[in-house]
Length: 132
Image (cartoon, rainbow, N blue to C red; front, side, top):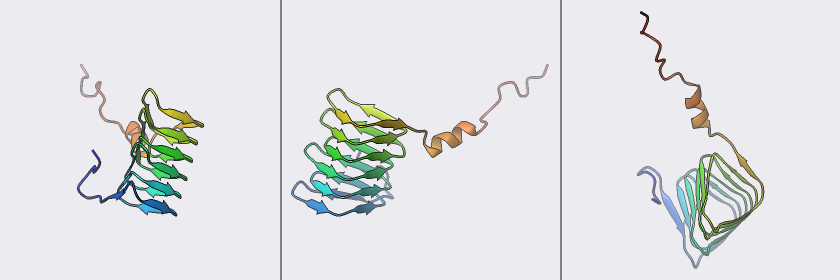
């Protein structure tokens, strides 16, 4: 589940590691420890139970089980597990919240760019070719 495809690298912040500063990553990021700074990720951000992020998180996908104190923006899907705590605004295309999750902030749902492009394409017309 953590590594979505073989082309992207995955990075792990261990439970004993505390990062102070911004993080920019092209692959996936798994956080067990603490991050005091903004995160810009082009893949999946996963926070484990007990992890803490203090800053703005911008990613494609987010699977949250820890604490985030700051805004969370995902171009695609956000999942808040039963152990997650989010204090900040949330922007996502798809949102899944399990019972027991804590969320305080504003939520805005948007359509992803890939979803909006496919909705405008004509796939097939069932009436074409049936002229009798």
